Length: 247
Image 1: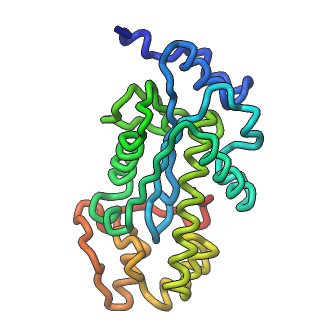
Image 2: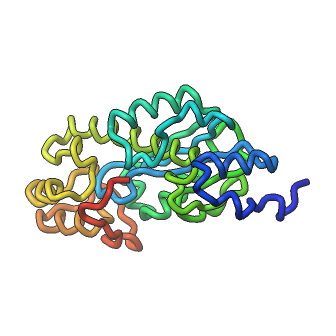
Image 3: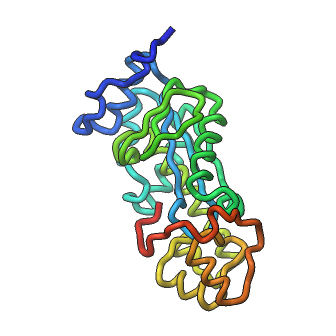
């Protein structure tokens, strides 16, 4: 039986000068594989779903993933190519889509945590260890560790970030067909100047997150009410950084 000490990864593996595969490689060598990475896309958006992905990569497959990094740092074409490669080469993966209405009901942070739990639970290959981008996620089905800027530090987290972002971007492209006035195909639901002007002109749609302050204000100005339940504890409480990097 593995002890609590054995489940604790060595400090040395946090060095990033040996590449994005070093952390999961060290965990595998300690008998803690398979290692799953988890990341999300859309946390900072005020429209559209939150998408969370988990991914398990083959140990020793680094040469196949040249250029794999944080999905935000890749071009759209590079992300699409990497998305196809991850689907082809990954041992296992899962993608969870949390609709805007569910984000409003739970709050974005709680929805994100719950989505990460679902993404890990849906893996057919049960992980021995889970690496999560940025913060601790309680309640996972395997030991886990948050990794600062994990999508730049651990290949499996970067792969999950690609799966989540490409999935979400494609969803937002389809939503643009239904709601062309908002420009979702360009800004993907983030609070750019174009999106803010569209919100003011047309008011929020059913795909907007009414728990976000800017959406609630735009709805109020148009005399509109949320088309779904918004928990009072999170209503208009989320903070959106205008012009921030999409994630």
